[in-house]
Length: 113
Length: 115
Image 1: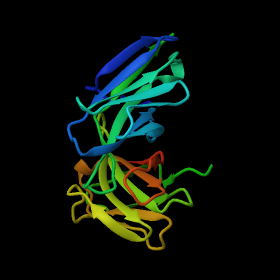
Image 2: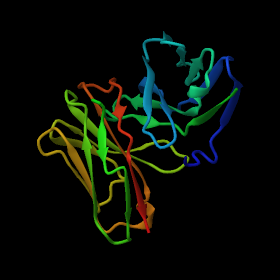
Image 3: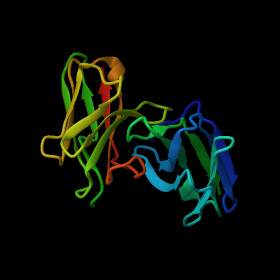
Image 4: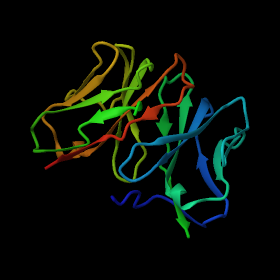
């Protein structure tokens, strides 16, 4: 597979532990946020989204937390599995700047067995 | 498989040649997006369509790039007179909605290498 994210932050966790991936955004006009997972050679895969009128949303094994005061978004993965190893991106829609998503730089998650 | 489909998966071309990529979105999705991704970076927005109308283009989309979605279904992205800096993964995504709060569903991309 390709070598992705030579300079991306990396989070290494033990299989079975919980993972927390963080994302800071700078635009207070952002009103919709998504977390994506990208495996080598594939396109980004939707994980979970949250609108700015919420501060927490849960899915299957994943939770997204939004702190608008400090412009911070996090993705929590419970009981991390080897299949969770990938690059994770947060993306935001900036209100008034069209109907597109702006992506962050990404975080590499490595799960050790 | 009813996801977003992109063709070809890989394209190697010589500098100065023209290339064209195709994207077939999820059938009920009215919006179609093109993004570009280079190694170690997040995807960067290029352009998007709502049905057949191209509603927004990024400054990244130089005059050598053109995208079409003639019948509001599949889309093509053409790059004329390719340059080495065009080497990247070109991602297509689709969504359903009218506002900015619909998730984009991505294909697996076309990897372009310009030699």
